[in-house]
Length: 368
Image (tube, rainbow, N blue to C red; front, side, top):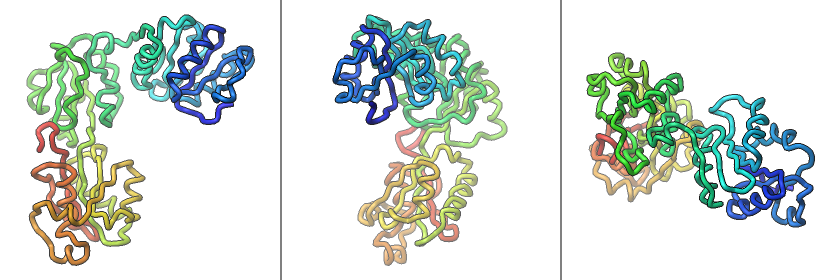
């Protein structure tokens, strides 16, 4: 009986495989464990281990749908045959990792990048002192994995239409431009230098002069018509760098707040997908309109005390705002505090019941 369903599941069907699975489960309690009931050892209930009878093939469709990743101590050929009818899409299929019966090899089988099977393979191999086997070209060649580029920072790509040809350009060592206008700089994860076929640029204009075969563009900006052709064989990534400092009258609706955000970002030609946080005064920590927006988009919600806000030099301190809040400003100092930038993209705009300021996180490319 499994008391708590977790993200990952270990499955074993042989005597040696069960012992290996039990040992792995002790080191990796974040996973559930299932094995055949004929190998019951008496402590399964105590350790929350699930058991099944009959063929594992009958269990696999449910497990495939229920878990983020499956670790099977089953022969590779058998696993391939069993999962073949279950495959749907690499964006939704779970990670599948296979371990041989002796625990000598850990093999990434399915959803290596998007599903995290490659990373899971490395993790498990270290736990059981086995050999990780990964065949994904970008990992083997130690180059950029286009489909998960910047994922650890929360970057999102606008479209997956060009993932395959751009990935091919990267691994085939064609000329690839990385255009970075904002976002985290430490995306290169290997100790060796960037491959010679990949060059980093500060702007799309500079990259286009070199006529790259493919491009990875990292920016919070909406591209101009003159820039969009770089995406003919390119991927556009949205880093989480936009900070919205905001204030509002009590009871302002989420619809009005949302409208001001969209209008302001359109004026600045910034992408909504690059918003990281709304920042405000702590008096607004329970403002329903803000809470509804945060829940809608999954952004961070940061609040500051009046004392913290008053430590920031702002362009237009307001005695009226101070009278009601204890702070001489809300949106502008909140955006400056969180972004840690010296200059905001929008100092302050009043629109109906809402005040908004916009900053880009400091210490990012070309900012601060």
